[in-house]
Image (cartoon, rainbow, N blue to C red; front, side, top):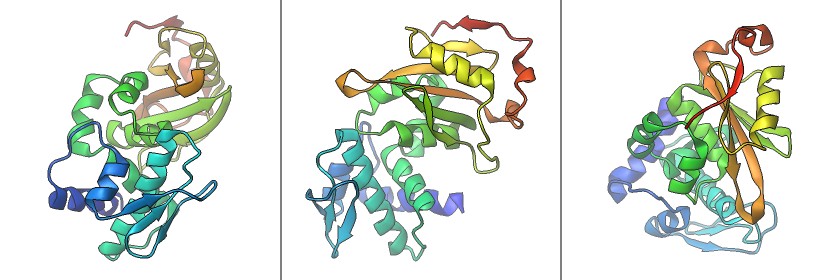
Length: 226
């Protein structure tokens, strides 16, 4: 199933040419023959064959996410696949962060702040989703101390964060550097208008049972060097 979703994005770029970062969903929509219009609140939709309507009052990255999701729905229908929310989100992330572009970058660094700077049109939730998928990671997004999204590779349920993960996520929000507990890391990501989100992540292979915080007992919590 994941391979089918990935192929939707690959097929589109086969037609449009090799993708180059940073990718803009608005430009991608125009390249596919769509006009992008505002006028909605809190949602987006396809109108007819060549119009995408969005909420233009939200953060620019969120606008790009809306456009990318509608392109994903359109792209899935083109190849005869049903369009559920999970599938649309995966394809949207693959459109804005194609494997050929993002995989080498992810191998260089796991720092989401670096990736956000490289890809300013990608909403943090789509970035975290793609990091989990391509990096074989468990990735959580925290906003104002609350868990808002949690992603894992296709073979693993995301589960719930252990106490250690919550603690280092809280510390990372106030730190200029990543905070580490063993293989678990948390990074502050500076959003627009002075907001700070936190992304915590770890290799999926060591987090099969996240309810057991004892896994981290032998690791001191230290501030990491980038």
